[in-house]
Amino acid sequence: MDINSIAAFLSWPTDWYILGGLAVLSIVDTIRSGSQRSTAVVLALLATAILYTYMSQALVIGNVITALTLPITHVVVFGVLFAFMLVAALHIISYGIDDGKPVLAILLALATVILLVLIWIQVPVLQSIWLFSPPIKALFSESYRLFWALGALGIFAYVRS
Image (cartoon, rainbow, N blue to C red):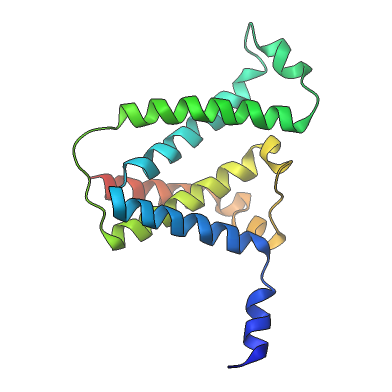
């Protein structure tokens, strides 16, 4: 066993380990219970990202949101909104039995992680928790963002069809 190859593997940025772990969790869940939860997570993330940007201009809660000064409070607001959107998405798309197939699970996990990174980079409040490394930022930069999103959503459409 070559020690240099192990050292090279361990020198990767932490982002890659976290994203790989999320992909593995998504694969296991999709194989176990189908694509419904991964699809609901992505739909909830998209809805939350859009709605969160509108919250500061909302009639009643706009003043409360803009008065929050700590980044962690904004993260909590984002998390609560995501939880509501996830429950809504699960109820919207809960139909039939969805078999988890390994190849489709891998594709779905890839699409889920791609959209998670795209949304994370777009929502400034989430960057207060974790700031991605330069290679991840370059890979998902504005030049490629549209193609990543279209590809990931295309994968979801294929898996759910």
